[in-house]
Amino acid sequence: MIEPDRKAVLAALPELSSVILSPSFAVLTTDHECWTCVAATSVSALWVPSFVERFDDDEELSVADAAVLRFVESINLPAAQHISAAAPWMLMATTKGSGTRYLVNRCQACGAIHGDFHLFDVDGPFGLVTLEKQGTEHINVRYVDCPIEAVAGIAQATWIDQISARNLQPQ
Image 1 (tube, rainbow, N blue to C red):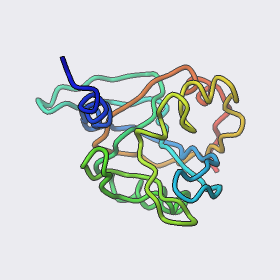
Image 2 (image 1 turned 180 degrees about the vertical axis):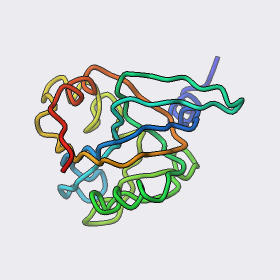
Image 3 (image 1 turned 90 degrees about the vertical axis):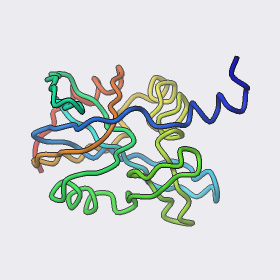
Image 4 (image 1 turned 60 degrees about the horizontal axis):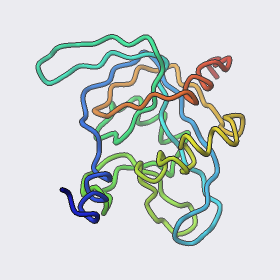
């Protein structure tokens, strides 16, 4: 049996990553209350309309469905430049919970890290319970017509399908 505090550590660890390739992506942004200073702060996530997942053995899997990237360990430079312009609060950092370096959100008021574990938790700003209650209309979608290549995990959920159903037009 796993000890209770060990379960929390294991739950905070990032998912296994692979190379995710998509011809375009979107930066999803919403407001959230900082867990440290309680200020209203913007948080963002990366959405892909479809993707190819490349595994360590060079095997590839094409997926026609949309997904959100999680625990992004690296990203191609052109996509990173678009992300930086759309969400300057997103940057690479190491979180205490995971002990790994990945693309995180920082509070614009105090600089606290908002990692993926809390953002995508069931009641986080991109969590299932939150989005079932609020819907996705409060999420700003900034479409980027640029290929993205990232070492990341993926998440798929019904709210992601709601984002996909929106009429995403290049800006």
